[in-house]
Structures are given as C-alpha cells and as structure tokens.
Length: 193
Image (cartoon, rainbow, N blue to C red; front, side):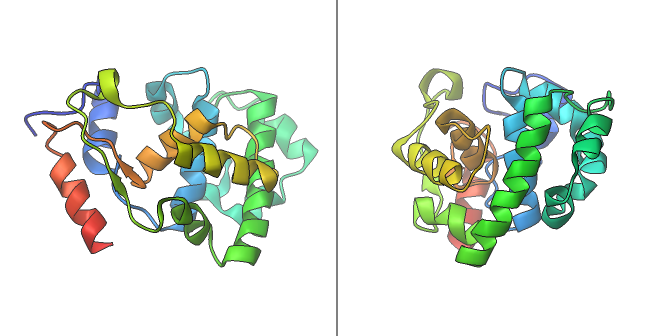
C-alpha cells in the first residue's frame, strides 16, 4: 500500500489500518470486542491497546458476551492482577456492565449489529477527508445518539468520542482519508454489505 491515513505510526497500526479499520462489521462478537477495546483505550494510545489485544481476547474469553456478563467480583480482582491488559478497575467493570447491556440489547433488537447499525440507517457513512488528523471530527450527531442509547442500556465508557472511534473501527463510518489506499476498498465493501 502506498498511502495510509496520517494517524498510522507503528507496524501494529499499519496492520490494523490495512486489514480491519473501516471494514464494515456485522459480527456481534467483533462489535463487542471493539466496544470493550475502545473503552479501554480512553486516555491511552490506540497502539497500546493493539499491543494488548491478544491478552484482552484471552482475559475476556474471546469476547464471548455471555461469559463476560457472568464475570464475578473475584474475576475482576483477578483481572486487576493481569499485566497483559489495562489494569483499571473502572474499565474492567465497564466491560462486564457492557456485556450485560449487550444481552439486553440483543433481547430487544435481535443483535448488537442491528442496534448499532441503526444509527447510520444500516449503511456506512462515506466521509471525504484530505487529511484524517486535521479534518475528521472527534464526534458526530450519530455518535452522540449512539452514546446516549448505549448509556440508557447501562453501558460505561461509551462517550460520544469513544462511540465515534467505535463507529470508525467497525466500518459504520469510512474515515479513510482521500489518498489512502484503503478508502476505496472500504467504500466497495460498504456497497456490498
């Protein structure tokens, strides 16, 4: 790939950007994973979370929503000793609360995918940024609405900025800058859903 979005700095960033970021996802397990990881990233660099991603998959049962929803206070204490993840009680407890909220969302909407994609009418938003860091917003009215709705279900660490990052990650928004080699691929995938 010749050009990438200007936020890409490390080899881990490159791989994530080239293979996953902006690719439309309707897989509930993946959506839950990204919801947890975006919340864990709050106040940290995305590279830090990418480097811990496999540890998160291990610690959070490959993001099996039902399993995480059953995590006990003793499990939280054990996770606080796991150097492979961000050892922040509020973020760990948020992941568990979010799993429980996702179970309620699934019961009402059929799937997490049905719920989150409804905030973009089921079709990825195609943006047109010359330079990502200079032009892409931190939040939008859609991320504001998603944040409010997730909070109404009891989710934590789902502010509008985190929700917008989630929307970018799972392809609800194509924010690849105009000269990026991944932009057209994600746009084509969006059309194919």
